[in-house]
Length: 169
Ligand code: HEC
Image (cartoon, rainbow, N blue to C red):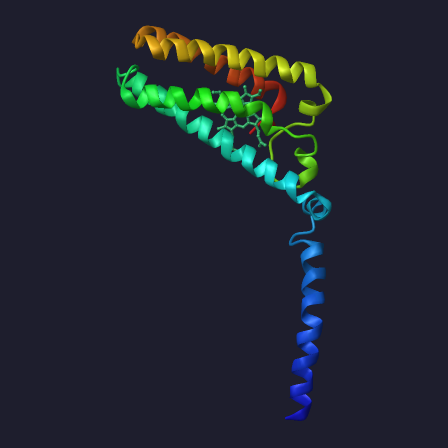
């Protein structure tokens, strides 16, 4: 009894330390997880928030497309999604704090070029925002043909940024 009681206390004292060591070593021990041990938690959070932001952008963009395909380019749902894309496009420049790239050890697809070539990256953001402004104006007009045309132009700017600054799938 005494011995096992002692063993229990001993285990209780030792366990937290050994768990910390295990956590620090990471599960599979590949390079990315090792890097994550040193990563700034705020930057890990920023990378994860960015992924959520892009997922939301993707969902809203798809809503517009689905409505266009159904012949409802100016539906309430499409117009609401256009509004949402405008909000996200305004916010997008804040999604890339320095240090939130691959060094976070997350599964981010953001390429280091974003921070190495800030002017080129800013150019992609500006092209995108300009196209989204046009889409917003088309949405205001309620003109389905104008929305479809502007949607296509925004799509080109999404792809153009992905070509240079997002890891290939
Ligand atoms: C200025 C550059 C830029 C523009 C413009 C841009 N993207 Fe991206 N996008 C990225 C980068 C970089 C990533 C990778 C983010 C990451 O993994 O950290 C990404 C990731 C994504 C993802 C993947 C999210 C996930 O699940 O990980 C989707 C979906 C996406 N973008 C959709 C869009 C759509 C739709 C548009 C246009 C309406 C767009 N993007 C415009 C740079 C851009």
